[in-house]
Length: 384
Image (cartoon, rainbow, N blue to C red; front, side, top):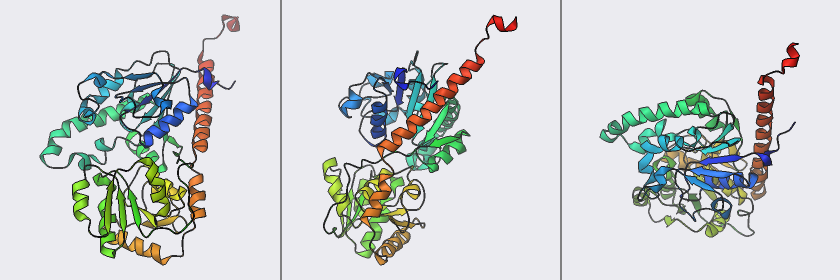
């Protein structure tokens, strides 16, 4: 008999709630599916998210009570595993972990189904530890902790009954580091917020990104400076001083902009430049939803969303030369169709995401119910 999801007691475990970014948009969609769900998180800054999230029962960890914890929470990383394990999920039927750090390591009740929607394996513990912690003495200092964190990360993955990855790229990482299979259910783009507009496009390329080293924004800045192309860069972060030092007369840094200003920038750009390797990457989808093509490095999530030659152009040489050649190739091709870009983005709708997730959860819960029934004690009468 199909499981009635509305009758389940549901816990959604999210790493932290201190801003509203891509993971929080997914969390909002999960809250729409499960209006009865309670949220468990390490840190919560009230007012940073939608009413759909803020109006829930939100349980925080003991770390949330430390002075300045919500401002300097990343420095508390060594305590994250302990904090997530201290959360009590007693009596919940379904645990959904929305995880890019430690939330998948929560300890579920024995009879609950734990499904983890995994944005990425823990980057700083595995393949990007050098980018986060550098090299030399700093790397040596954190090495013992990273060793522990990797062991905890693998061990805690056994607490997940079923992994769902945001892309094939992440599915492969889950198999590599956790030795677990996973289903792929792509996230979604806000198709109402981003849309093509009539009229001529502006004479600029666009980058929208956090300023982190692994984003490789410098490739876009230096390539456009070399070619004399206008570039608008939206965002901010730890890498800002270095990136701004690379800019010249053709590059404009606008900092972080209000969400309301982004759709027009996307719709007016010649193309959006996406030089980094992302786990999924929502920016290319926001560009295509706006009818704007994408020039992207052909690895990671972008390789699963952008269609080379139809909705954008890939480059495979991660250098300034490679980026510059990709821009020149883009400019040599016939004009890209805004309709084709939009149609590609429409596949990644919120309705598709929610329907696929509900279908999977229903199947898993029914399988669990069948297994529980098959293993339940037999009536004494059957032995007579």
